[in-house]
Image (cartoon, rainbow, N blue to C red; front, top):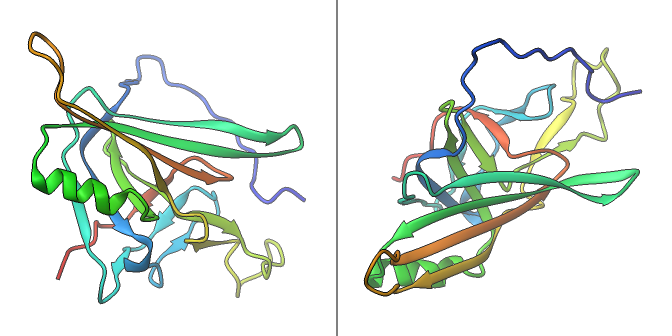
Length: 196
């Protein structure tokens, strides 16, 4: 039995297909995330509800330079057991004490990363839409098909900073965030958390 229904997908002639990301990127440490009000839709790729912050949780915003951000997911694994590895890449300009301190804190801290695509969908990396082992099929009205899990959080792969040289170089840091899941980063159908 297939866990997700196959459906036709068409492409409308003249439809926009703008690449890249817009706006800043947001990070919440795994220990600061509360998913108790969230569910995963039956499509297996949509997180519904608002992510909350624990008492110690905080959402941080990191500026991302326009036209220098991307999100990609690539198949990994054996031919009969694939999953997706997601890479979020963005550039933030400058180098100051706040940024460098933040980079030090992020370096070994797992969590979730939230960003916006060019269709203005919030996407979230680091939350896994795990198949619910209790789900008993379409007739099951008690258990959800999928559950939101933090068991495979996103992690910083690299943060490469440069002072550049004068003349047309950039000065700042390229962030590369990696997460693994059986799906691309989830669509987030809810509001961003707000710090207390």
